[in-house]
Amino acid sequence: MNVSSSGDTVAIVFSVLNGASSLVCMLASGVLFALKLHKKLVYRLALYQVLIGLAFAAVETFEIIFVDYDESYERLCIAVGWLVVYTQWAKLLLTVWVTVHLFCFGVLQKNLKKLEVLYVVTSLLVPSLIASVPLITGSYGYSPLGCYIHGTNGTAYKMAAIERISLWNAPALAILLAASTAMVVMVIKLAQRVYLRRQFDTTLDGDQYWTALKQLLPLAAFPILFFVFVIPSLVYGTYLFNTSAPSEALTLATSVFISLWSMSSGITLLVHMTVARLYGGKRHPRSRGAGMKYCSSAYTVVGETESMVYVDSVTKYSLPDDSI
Figure 1 (cartoon, one colour):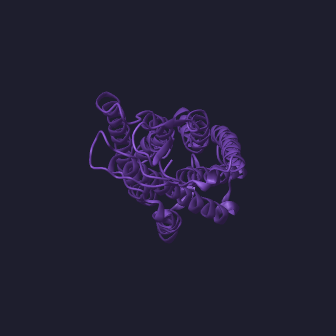
Figure 2 (cartoon, rainbow, N blue to C red):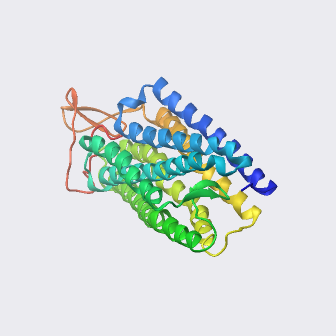
Figure 3 (cartoon, helix red, strand yellow):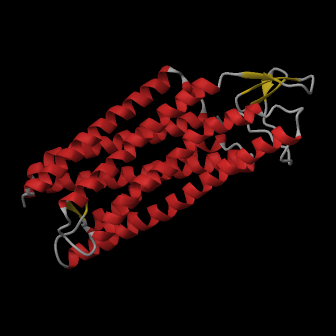
């Protein structure tokens, strides 16, 4: 089977955009290590997203070799299809963990730092199981967007479409919708606490929470942007259920949005580091408590140590240590 010239155009554009996404992700990762921000958990969570985004973009860039696809590429195409599904799910699960961590930090006042290993292990192991399902059923094949879950015409094509919707479209839509909603709730709750502290408790320093809010916003963008950019591919995947020959324009537009999955991760991390650099270094004196000397960013400093203080009060709410 040879792809058409329109398919060639999509493959070339797809590979070029994912190549650019790879460069953005490498730049963001390099800047993070240069600033030694990898020592903080939330930055590492963001870094994991960028690194898996880099892996996804690199795999998709590699699909340029399939411009003149024929049967001799079948085994290689199956391997690439497995990697695409694996990196998709790894990115999705890492997005979930970023959401859980930030929601617990901003709303429930809990620090889940000890669960970092669980974040990483589940995000690396679970996708391998999911990506192996189409491998077992023989559903990997060459699609208009490269190697993916895409059977041949007829019954096999319909079964692959159902498998694609079941393994990615439906769960990704539900998970990202929930994650985006959680991030909106987190931002609203934290902003509410900032407002109430400033209005009703002038002896406490509300500026540290405003700073924390500014630092959280870029991280909250991870699930929200992923949700926005994944919608076209979900719609496209559902559309393919009813046709095996989609329009070139729709395929091209979908390829652009898919390429932005990785690029948005790199840009989000760069924005986060910039915001933290601009607003994270200020220290604010507190007017109450001899042992409380300074508040730096989202940290409460008691004596010579940074400690977590959880107070069941809106106006006396304190953010967990080492979360920003």
